[in-house]
Length: 148
Image (cartoon, rainbow, N blue to C red; front, side, top):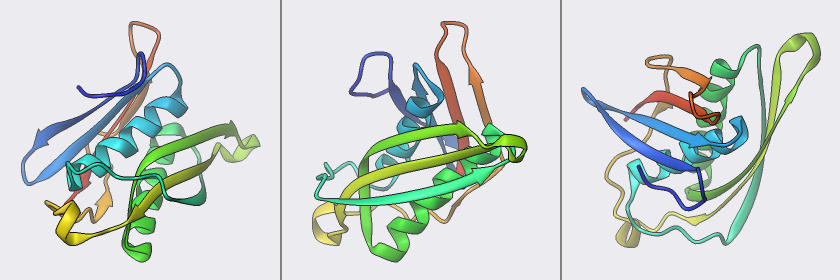
């Protein structure tokens, strides 16, 4: 487990040909942010500078599906914008009868293939090993398989 904030961490877990990203934090928002950090670290070990900001919004009927939508939004921004991100400000709110809405700001920089030396390309978040739950210590865990 790696992380920068107290009680927050991310991990990459083995899974056949893919990778499992896991985020932990005091809140669902912190766990989602850490899962996105794990996604970035699955691609590169090189530090990513917070030079540019992008805002994304997604919705889903439950938190598990919201995690998939969130990670796919990050993957989309990486692919279309040619960027990597390593800092995330996530806000999750109940969206009435529709479920949950996530709004986030992602900070990162353009992908420099020579400097970042990407190990893989993230294709998408999947429903495999998908979980968002409170842990026994009062924190939150957000986990799913990323197709690489």
